[in-house]
Image (cartoon, rainbow, N blue to C red; front, side, top):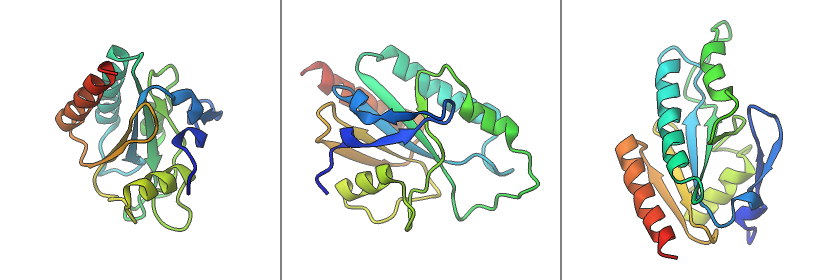
Length: 171
């Protein structure tokens, strides 16, 4: 598949509008997958809000060099009780006015994998992504270089971004 990262698109959760990745050209772009937060044993709303706020702070400090896309995904290993009220947690994901883009939930593995994740996995030669740990991809401004990282501790995430943004500043 010779399709460019900048030819892809996905739907934003808060607005329901299609976001075209062509708008990401010349930015370091981070694509994060987060297990859909709708289970009693997953992080609570405050933890999700804190995580997203930290990522937003990084994005705000580098607003002319960095874009962040967060894709919630439905983890097939998790049980999502139909009677559980997930509205408080979903609100954190749907909040408008964020400096990062939260996309609609997608499938990251299997037959119905979202086209963005098909492209990402193909480029890094990974059949299936880990569904029990966070993963993220970093796309260079030219859209040609792609890094894949498993594990999403905030310190590790910050280190990767500092390195990429330093390289971006040297361009």
